[in-house]
Structure formats: C-alpha cells, structure tokens
Image (tube, rainbow, N blue to C red; front, side):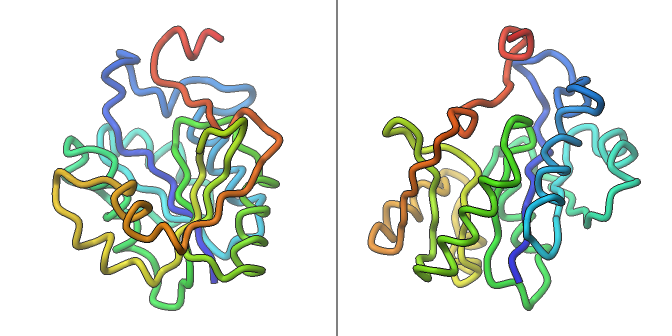
Length: 189
C-alpha cells in the first residue's frame, strides 16, 4: 500500500495569507494537490494540518482523506513530514510526500514515482527536471523510524544524503515539479 502525505501545515508567512485556501482554478491550492493525490494510483491520503487547522480541515472535509495535526508546525517542514509518517497505517509500504503549495503537480507524476519504486525497489524516488530535483518525493516506509528520529535541525535531505545508494532520480518532462507558490508574485504568475 502506498499513500500520499500532503503537507498543508505552514503559516504562509511570505504570502501574508493562508495560501492553501487561495483560489486555484475551480478549487483552492490545497484542493488541487489533494485531487492529484486522489487521482493517482494510491491507496490513501494523509493531509497534515497545522496553521489555520480548522479552516483547512473544513475546506477538505468533503474529500476522502485522513488528517494528521502538526502542533509544532512552526518548527518547519520536517515536523510536518514526521506528523504525516506517524499517522500512516501500519500496512503502508511507502509514502509520496506532496507539498500542499504545489498545485501544478499531476497525478501522472505521482504514478510514475510509484511505478519506478515498484520496478526498482529503490527506497527514495526523486523527480528531476533539467538537472534539478523537485517534488513530490516517494519514500519507503522502511525509513519511517529514521524520519521520526530526526532532530529539529535536520531535514529530509539528510536521509537522502545518508542513503544515496538507495536513491533513484527519474527525469520528469514537467517543469511544474520545481514550482511552488510561496509569495504573492508566485501566485500572480
């Protein structure tokens, strides 16, 4: 079983308002990410909430997702990854970590990560475009205890560096794996 962990806990300081709830097409930014996860060949979705928890939860209430709450969301992204991994069901074999502010990511990209993981059994599958690593990232559940054990100053890059032999980079013909929305300028584009 492979699930998505959608990171939607941040405070959106650079945006000046909760970016997860900003309109994006017919939905919102976070709904676009959740829809991509639900459209992919995954067995479940955990959405990690934090800042503006009640408002984001209410917006996502109609979706068949599980919620995890990161009470320490101000510590940064790693704390949300840890909250998401802690909330995964026991039988999950891998998780696709998706950024809640990447509404351009497609279900096909997620499916490609899953297919390459199943094909190669590599523990970390990273999408690459034009020589640059992007998101989402697939991480084998075998790294769960290592992720949960990382201290406040660490990042997922520490695991990627430590497990370099278990990393597979796959070229994705989509520059949107490098795009997120952090500022009003990003949103305007």
